[in-house]
Length: 433
Image (tube, rainbow, N blue to C red):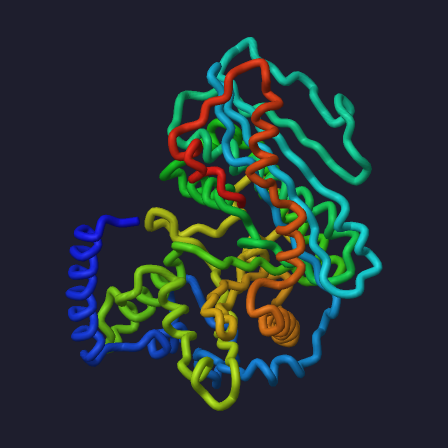
């Protein structure tokens, strides 16, 4: 508990901040919902997918009405994973392990797929003599339906990001490989917990494409970065062949891609709007735009709010425009990298104030009717759950590596002493994923 005197000082400062914000809010300025209307302007590498006679704006629907919409796919699936986080040992060993699972929602003939899993272990020890050799799942007992992949992280110069690299590879390889394995067997939409193309691997690729920024991972282990992204591309292509959607759902993000594009459009068009806009990132912008008091105090019951679709044609990296996958070692079955770019919309779930970015590869939604069908499916799921789709929640519950599991796995490495930093000993870093 905070010291009473210190808390009093904090409360006083926040009170003064509130006064300043209150005065700012009374001034005439552009609202977030008004700002979104400028997405219809050219430029910024983001364009609305709307008929020419329609303006870009927020749609508010009573949840009771959405409940009555036809669900295009009554059975759906979700991919999620969990990690041990980084495990450190006194001889310099660094390890990270992950589990990825499939969740099922609805009366599926393929419910047994939920029993399968993909597991990974990535280990790094910067010594010439250390080798994991040709370890595979034949070296130990692996239950039926469980894949086990062991990787040795290459030797490299010391970097403060090594823990991030080890854990990032472990998690994204497991989730992407499991998604690809499941895509050929499911009979409904596949929801991915997070973006369609995962971070940090997607970012590693972009920096490599422009030849600037943090490129250590593509220098240390380029083939692994390619393998991770190839799994996700293969998932997209498999679902496309089977005429089924794959949908990424991002619940939190500090990205400002849409906000930057919006400011570029406003500046290029020379309209009477001051830039930079006051919002810090996309989540803030869309959270403000999608909020409506009618959701909690109106006479139509709870309200689900969402935007039309937006298509991103390029990414801007260090001021350089780039088309993801266009010049990177990933095989694209459909040839043109533009087909794999992301189409997205934002939605606010009723009563909970959760704002999510929903994204799909353009390859799967180049038809307007198909976009409407997928958007309707997502909105039905979110209205029912008032949270992420049930299939993702199911996958999360089954994949979760608990703090007890984490500590047990750490203790399996009994030939060397485990190292835990101060915060980890206090339990700060042992929170369950």
